[in-house]
Amino acid sequence: MTPDRPGDRPAVKAPMPAGHPGGRLDGRLVGLGVCGSIAAYKAVELVRLLRAEGAEVVVMLTPAAAQFVGPLTFAALSGHAVETDVLGLLPDQRIGHIVVADAADAIVVAPATARWLGAMANGIASDTVVAACLATAAPVVFAPAMDGDMWTHPATQSNVGRLERDFGYRMVPPQIGSLASGQSGIGRLAELPLIVDALVAAVEGRPVRQPDAAARPPRTPAVRDADLEGSHVVVSAGGTAEPIDPVRFIGNRSTGRMGVAIAEAALARGARVTIVAGRVEVALPAGARVVHAESTAAMRNAVIGAVIDQPADALVMAAAVADFRPRAAATTKLTRDGSLTLDLEPTEDILAETAALARALDPAVRPILVAFAAETGSLERAPDKLRRKGADLLVANDVSEPGSGFGTDTNRVSILAADGSREDLPLLTKREVADRLLDRVAAAMDERDALAHTGGTTTEAHR
Ligand code: CTP
Image 1 (cartoon, rainbow, N blue to C red):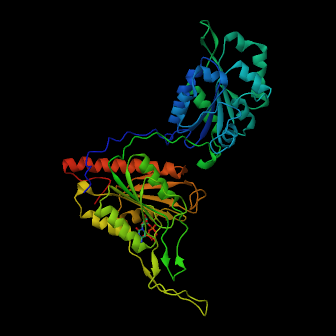
Image 2: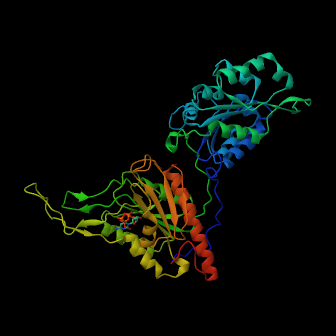
Image 3: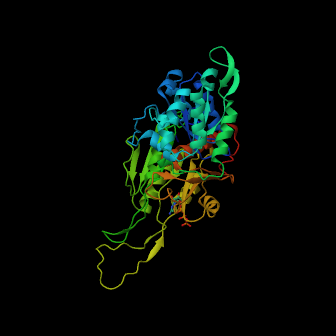
């Protein structure tokens, strides 16, 4: 039995969500341009409101804005690196403001200063906010904030007119109230909900411009608690290979990317990780114990050894396992004389067998079991597969969908639980999918540990 549970793992703290599903900007990417006005501090709250509506937000600061509010504040709240430099490159060498321009569903400039209005009206790309607006085909919303006399100056008014009339930008006009100068007048930044409403109206009826997470600006990995510390997580990764003869095998297209992403995420969250590796095309993380197991029979022994004998707190069966294998592999290389008929027999169902063994364990030490189901066309078989496998969670995806198949860095999955619930995740990087899945695994472990103390039965795991 593991020496370090139950109750040794720290309590799970909810990580910052990517955006709140069900909001009016669900799945949208918003570029938020902030200019150098005292009202820049209100843009911090605007990030929070946009995220609460479900948007992913990338902040762009003019140099003056960065003097009012530092990029760190915006980076922490948005989960994205902040664009401050018109010449700035992303870690993968793409040009930051161009990626925002190409992927954003809308750009909102709030507060927009008199200087910025002048630069924008004349197409002077001296800062990253103007540059992104020039480069985008997405709608632009701007909310001016400045001193009252600056606002009423004909230069400012003519620039605003140009933006609205010639560029089709939508303005959220400034309001009357007390200004930074101590005077009262027109020039206060509009109330933030009005800016959010204008943005919602600007994108309404338009499809999401860039649903592919890999083509969007990269999210900074959320800093997560070591919520798997003290636990042992076993992940199977890659595809199995069933020998036909000494040189040929029956294999599949799995590359191991998803399993490796889960192993890396589990390591980052403090777990001890065993990878049971079939054929993989990606590097395996250094911190994990690796057991190589190419055939289904070898993988079965390795999984049962790691999960039941060791034992483990969780098994994530991300490997693509063969359902059939040649009844007898030829001992010498088959030649091309005549035709060839392969006599196939079913392989052992590793997950179902592990689930049966796990059911015999004390509920306090039962591993959380996660199945994967790569389907084509529809996920309607997924609930039945979850029951058939005896798993607690099943991660289903449609591999025929763009960005969701083998060999990609992204995946769109649904997580089904044994209690009948289903969570549909947006297109995410495989690392983000891994962390969202491990959130569920950690919660299920906590539930198991808590119920082990009280002697009840779990709801995630109807066993
Ligand atoms: N799996 C397993 N042993 C097998 C086949 C699959 O442990 N012999 C695991 C996979 O790793 C995956 C889950 O079971 O986590 C579902 O795999 P899938 O191939 O989708 O399911 P099958 O049982 O093969 O069902 P079907 O062929 O009807 O889709």
